[in-house]
Each structure stands twice: as structure tokens, then as C-alpha cells.
Image (cartoon, rainbow, N blue to C red; front, side):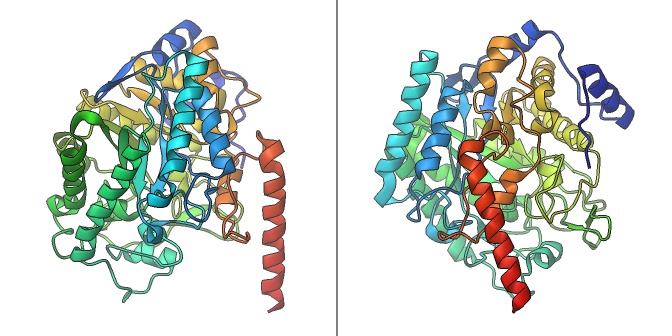
Length: 480
């Protein structure tokens, strides 16, 4: 269903008002847009040169041994030249069994030099284009994919709705407290390798349904890592403590936090609309979820956790929500779903409004902790109008782009230099990148992902190959 059909900013504003998307506001003046986006932001020991970020966007294009592949290098070279002063390096597995696919980036002793060369290349290209890299921050996102690890799911807690969505039986084993405790040191070792490679910022990924995201919502888990919020944040507290003991003030401590998980959605037939899977009440799973109405956020625990994270050393917070595996419209409002997935169950502007409302409430509650906002890409060329207004109003310190950075890696340069984006280059949220991420019928077990519509020379042929591989696989399944 097509929703973005606005010819002017005024038409988009009118639609926002009609839908009650009261938090989707816009700055019109180009000079004020440029001024807002050019604001410097202090994050730990670094002063970022502007208020624009590129979110951690996985390319699924590493080599089997985890080192960056040819397309990985190309993507980060483009990002480095693009002008954003916060380039959040993608989800990097801390161990092989924690990879979400066989081409996920994975840092280990045998490939540290590859990461080091890529990091140095990014800084050098940024200096050549922008004069300095002293105001550039490249956090390495440390992750374990947990339930979405391949080939074996690794879960810290059972959630009946998510188990049903992912096909996990009730008696599937969960990680023990001892296994989680040992995994804390695996995170520390991965950070040591990242520091050796030149990274001076580390992010704990606590979002999108992965291990730490499930753990922070593990209200029904027994033992030291479940139940009360103090226990559910124990792993994060311990890892942050170990990182601070190891690196002190030599690095910036970051976190991408899923502040509202929501519930799983499925495709309803025959119209294809998304609808929630049936769920029990009270809904005692997930983080930031209203137990009496899990379709709504509840930020009570979220604010308490963020206060603790700040006390434990977190200096930069990237605000996210939802899980791309079971409710993608929450995290990234879209114009078109990836093939076979459900249609938007709400107007995408309401999803954008949820992002802005929740992030704004959190940023205002913690004015001393710079936060990165999400949810801008669906607004297309008007995304920077909304970003500037949110920054001007104190609702966020940094505006981040994810899908749009794949389509338009130098969006920041145009935003800062012109105060507007090129309508012919902005992401149209058609979700081809997600389609590629879901395709496994590749000799290496995973197709690389990018933007086929706006990076046609590279990803157009890959898209064609992925569709053909899917067609062959479906035809073979029908013959069996």
C-alpha cells in the first residue's frame, strides 16, 4: 500500500495533523536546518563534529572467517566520506556461535589486522574529505545473536508468543547462569581485539530480539540473570564494569537500546495486513512493554535502566525499538514490506511518531546523556526537516539514518551543505535490503544486502540472483 504520496512538506504536515502524529514536526528554513544538524555533540571524551549519525547497518557480506569482505570495505569507505560524524559500526559477533548468519562480521584473533586496516582506511578517507577525523566516532557494536544465532538458536528465556513465532518448543534449553557469566568475558575479549584494531568506542547491542535484548526483558527467568530489573541488567552491569576496568577513559562507552519490544505480528489472510499473534495478559515478557496492554510502551523500567547505565559508564545511547524478525513496522516504518511479510498494520507516520515521542521523552529525562534518534527514513527527503526540529526542540541530540544511508551514503554532506536532500536519491523504504538479508540460498549461506534501487550496479545483479535462487528453491520444494 502506498502511503508516501506527498508533493510538499505542507501536505506531509497536514497528514501528520490528521492522524494525530503530534510529535512529527518540521523545520522549514534551510539555514536553520543546516545550523541544527551542524551542532557539535560531546560524547564521553570526544566532541562529534555534527549531529548526524549512520546507524549500525549489517551488510551480511563478511568472509566466512568473519573478516570484512569486499562489499564491507566499499560500504564503510562510502560512509566515511559521507559527512556524518558518528558512523556506528555494524553488529559484530563476539563469538562464532553468536553469529546471525555465516557472513556476519565476527572479530577474532585471526582477523584483527583486517579490522585495523578498515578502521584506519575510514579515518583516512574522512580526513581527506572533511579535514580532520578528530571529531569522528566509530563505535564497534558488540553482539551475540541469541535466539537468532545460526545454525543453533541460543535463548536466555522462553516467551510463548516469540517461541511460537520462531518455532521454539517449550522444552528447548535456555542458557544457564554459568554460561552467561562466562560469556561476559567473551565480550571483554572481543573489546580487547577491537581496541587492538583501533576502535575507541564500544557499544553493547541491547535491541532487536538478540541475546542481551531478550535478557533485559527476561522477567520470567529464574536465577541471577532474570526476574527483577536488577538481575536482568546484571550482565550489562558486569560487562560495562569489566570494560571500564580494562580501558578506563580511553574509550567511549555506548549502547543501542531497544526501549520498547512490542509483540510478534503475523500476516493476516486474505488481505495481508499485519496483526498481533494472540498473547496472554498480563504480558510478562519483553522490555518497555505495558504488561496490561503490550501494544503500548511503558517507560518506567526503561528510565530506571538508563539511569543505571549512565551510572555504570554509558556515555552515548542509541534509541531503538521493535524486533525486525517479528514486528518490523515498529522499528522501521515502511512503504512496502519485504516479500511475503505483512503489510503495515498502521499508517507509517504513526510509527514515526512513536519513535519521536519515546526518544523525546527519554532525551528530556536525561539531558546530560546524548541520544541518537531513529525512525527518520520513511520521511524521505523531509527526514532532515524533522531531524532539525527534534534537535532544536531538545527532543534528541543526534539524528541517525539506517536504510537511507545504504541508499544515500553522503546524505549528511547534502544536509549540511544544502539544507535539503535529493529526492531522487533518498530511500523509499521499499525493503529490498531486508529481502536480501532473508535470502539464504547462496553458496556461502547468505546473500549480501544493500540498496538495489539506488545502488543498482552493485546490488541490482545480486537482487536478480537472489530472486532466481528463491524461485529455484520454491520450485524444488513443490516437487518434493
